[in-house]
Image (cartoon, rainbow, N blue to C red):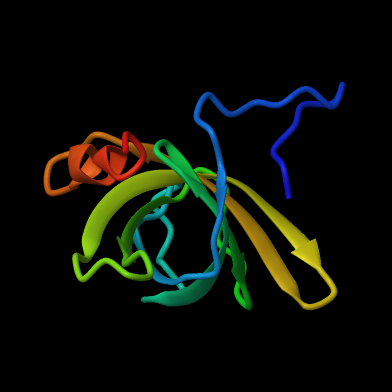
Length: 119
């Protein structure tokens, strides 16, 4: 599931890697100050990169929602606590596809995560 613009051009800066890992997503605050309806969302990765995720979820997450992600890559014992923003949420018959851009914010291990992709 590539993230492309209306002309079909790739929008990601970072190379994607196909993965089937489980991650947990926790909304941090509502973009409009509304009450957050879901405390935690369990997702499966479609692909990952140094700068973001494409996830599959059974629950919709609002676009522009800031989230905290707990991710663990198969074969690596380290859990990464990351923060980002939901850029898109697309409905499908069997759930939703979420496009999340990672951001450097206090409490996030973005540099540790990005180091995984330098090898």
